[in-house]
Image 1 (spheres, rainbow, N blue to C red):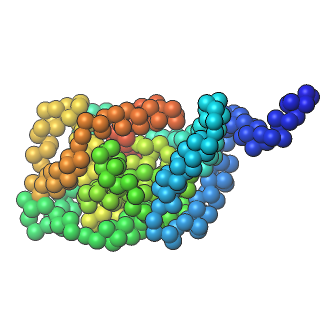
Image 2: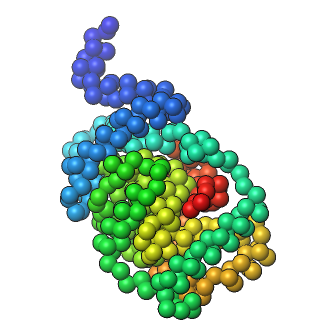
Image 3: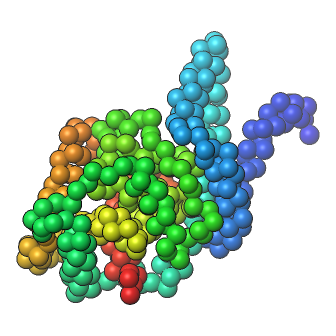
Length: 351
């Protein structure tokens, strides 16, 4: 072995080790059974446990702080270098190590066995099934609305404590069989970048490095329970957006708390109605008339709150996220959120 190669190995042993890990990741990311049995059920479950143990009682997001501090440290290091080659090397290594940590800590969950296979569900549905499911969810939404509101024309009072909603949502996660109840995180954190996220059109996100769930504190109360449960689902290893959406909505729908259940039904209804509008506008027009006016008022109020942050740059952020999802084994990209309709129809919710 040439002396230069030996010298490089000892000088760059961390980088060499990283290359080996990179190769291992690439070999096993196409093996869902291995990812499920060994990565998720062994490594990730323990990583999640230790993350909760170390960071769970801290009320602010360590991950968000790292997003601020680490780029500053990298830029400081770059400023000390006097050649373009060294600067590019630092940036390249930073991106490489970030990618590796992302994959090891959380990203490999994108390659797990999907819920369709686990639950023996088909990946298609008929228009009749969509219409029936939408009608059923409208009925259940109206029922819950009537329990929470004095009149079908008055919206549900949304003046709840956010901490109460957080606690009730976490409690609701224990009602479904799809998740490991022992690993449910007990602390959801407000994002330090809530205003920025509002303009970008994001209501929450998981930090894949620290496994913390961050919620945009500007999220309308109507959508807060499903946002929290969606991010908890990500924390539990449901990386695919349609699966996190499904687990989040399902846990709210099956909640023993009427308000949480109402929010879950409203969120499910939004996805179902959007898909119905795309496939059968006439039926959509007629079925919407059956929805209580008070429910429509709640949705309109939430939409007004979200629309305050609408801006010309939001589609660009969504386009970037769409590309990110496609790179990470989600072929539908950002449209995968809407694929929750398939799971809602084919899984026997409340039956």
